[in-house]
Image 1 (tube, rainbow, N blue to C red):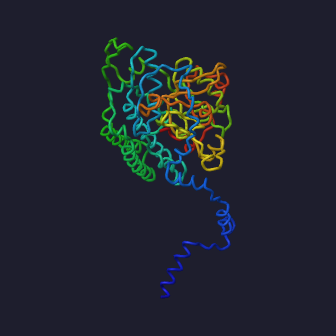
Image 2: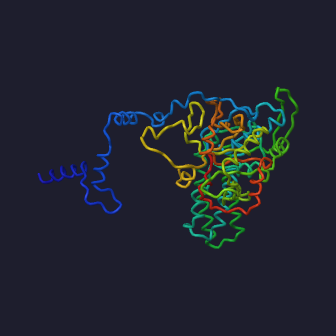
Image 3: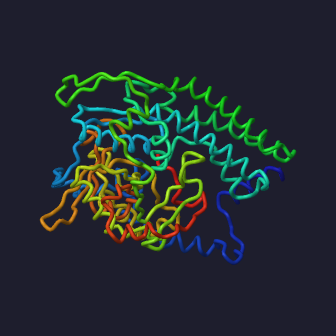
Length: 465
């Protein structure tokens, strides 16, 4: 009988906890009582609770009035054709870079709709990233596993995400091929399993290299073993993605479908003939990061896709300066690599990014008042996705009203492109890569500075996917 009373008492205590005096910083019984008393059990609050309990919060927060009178026309738009689809992969950076280049090819060579092979460049990206990791392990082999750089390397041996550094590092070295020359596979369309397995193997290799270095292996022996490891990674890539072509035959047609010529190319000769851009030296990444000083040049360590590539540097500027260069590029029919925090205030049904789309404050009776700087500092916002900036709508005074990006999520609202309000551009745009010829004098002066080096784990490093 006493045992039964004990369990009844324990159950009662769990259901109705009695707080002793809470230590400083804890939640006291009086705090809980005040919370309960402050909550107003009004019909309105009951209705909101019932709605939230049975529906998606985003659906309830939609500002329906904001859908009215939304104009989808644009005053200036880069000519481009076709919408690509990265499917279940984090290759938005690669799709975006190739979309920028194919728009240039179609414009400059009177080509019909053209798509470049993402699978081809992804193959070499993964091999170069594997080498970047393994060589980084060798370079830091004298440091303990607890060292922050070593820890970062083992946390990030390989990913399918990236930035414009991948476009400059990989395409400059390996060229490009049309999509039909190296087609997609299940592993390129859905990259996680392949990348995870290769990443797991790389971590194993990394530990082996550290053990050999600790045992005083000669540098030449470490390099020899690293090359053998890369051979195994190469084999895994071929099994998943297929062999990368060394040459191919391609028939060029004009925009009306007429055959112009048929030639045999290497991936590099194809790039040189139809593009020829100096991706490493002719392009500049512009950043709008109000948490750091403007008109400064920054560089992020390991922010590259190849060990012997170039850490990408960026010019940090007010958003108004970035818009000026973006408008100049669009007016000159030149698309741009653009990255942003795409998950915020996205109306997928209409293909619109607009800060007035969702009204969480009215739904919950509170405010969400952080500005862009505060969101960056608290890790509440950051660059997450890359798209191709192709259009701007200017009013009679030349002030932008809205923008358009070519996305890589396949056909959808607006045929695939995404429209963003100018206010959304201010709040959630982070990076824009422009040809140097569109730089303002003030931005060009910043490039003369010695860049401030930031660590690999800086929040701005985050890969776009």
